Image (cartoon, rainbow, N blue to C red; front, side, top):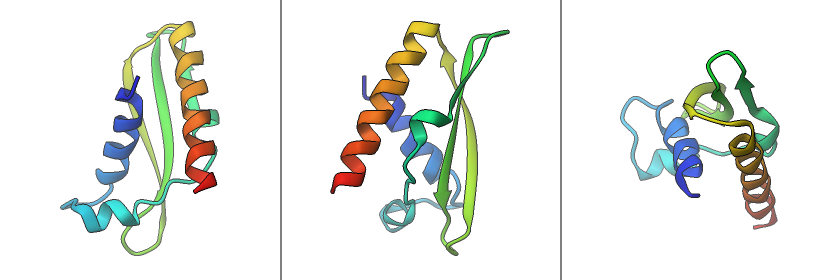
Length: 91
């Protein structure tokens, strides 16, 4: 179940024109990602809203559609993101 976390990292990197490791370090994730996963019941796509800081320190909200998702998969994703937030904030 690493796919969504990879998606979050890619989403952060896509805020930069030419991403590299230096930018990766600057893409600071803010806790609360688990609450930012929304599900669209019409087409069953989950939208992940991630808040990152760009190179100039400006806050950017990036929304990204994830693959078609079921309600159960959404709750699993939220649980995993919650665990990711806790692990990320404890370091």
